[in-house]
Length: 350
Image 1: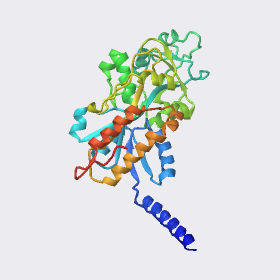
Image 2: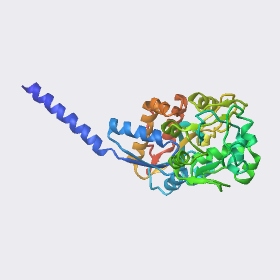
Image 3: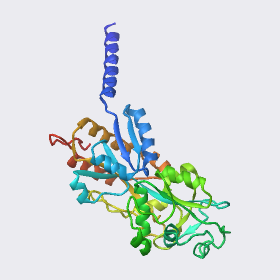
Image 4: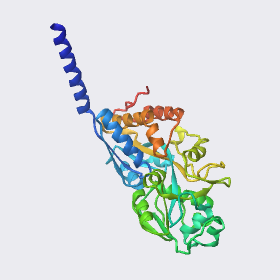
């Protein structure tokens, strides 16, 4: 009888411990890039089921995420445009990558399926500059001799908000087109020569689906989720490649991540016959000095769990997980840089 009572008390104690742990765990807030939103949402759902901790992530664009983390209105910011060391130091921030993904040009053309249209970087830049106005322009037709291209005007769709997706796209165009670099440049927000603006990857995807003869650019996960018609792009070394896990890995395989540089790395237009030319990492921004130790701990626990448990989910959405050696560098950087207001490290490397 005493054994039964003891076991019952033990069970109650364990239950109370679990309930107390969940009660003490703090929900966390993040905001920024729409580029990683599909995987952050998927991770957040699985993490809540596993731990009871909820992530509230606002997909508002990289520019908004940078502003909000600088203002300390969220626990972490997210950006597809890595901040240079000088800006990190100025705002007492650290950044680290979470996954690698890609930006993909998409089209809405009657009778044209995914992967049927080939474009070079120069032609793509000229389309977004407004120099190439019709789908049957000689520059496009010469690349697509087996396709009956329409004589319709090209409807250009771009982002209306500050966006890391835009930064990757315009950084690529700047590298392949001197005219684009001189007239427009690369940033999270640019003065678009032409086109219709959509808010977020979702907004661009919706406009491209709705507008006939349109072209836009979205993060790869949105291409898969919305079954959009992507184009083939010419790689740095001259081959026309599909946006796939293989081509993203090819672009990222020689990347040299370095904690001393704030993990600053841009993956667009990397060498390689099979490299997708608009590949990029997405980054998380956190303050080095944390006012709320519990919230910071929960953020780091979430991403630690994501690195350990989230790879398959990332691959399902066409993101590339980071290799284990890079994750180790990131965890070491957490321990060294993210501290509470008393200067004590918030993360202990395990």
